[in-house]
Image 1 (cartoon, rainbow, N blue to C red):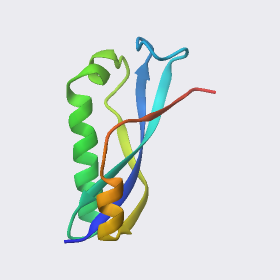
Image 2 (cartoon, rainbow, N blue to C red):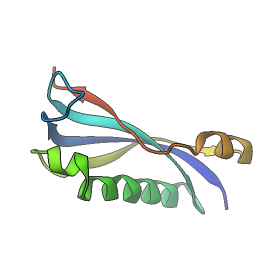
Image 3 (cartoon, one colour):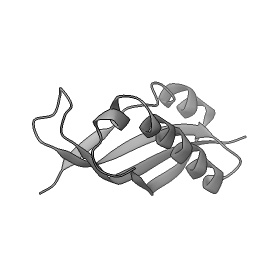
Length: 99
């Protein structure tokens, strides 16, 4: 089964009560490295991983906006070497603020 790198964009959130934030965040970008049969399945797996992190936990508790609307920025098939190199930590977000 192939490996894929999936970059997702999420918006519709509102985070203002996080320790590391100086300004309120309204969206994010994130990367997930997954194993799937094809690109469409890879996107689905990546979206499910991210959605699970926003259903409960610190981001869910701090989010006073809506559940993130997830869109795919890019999908790239990876070699086994790239998968082994890039699959960790497979978490985290780059947040952005409203301009």
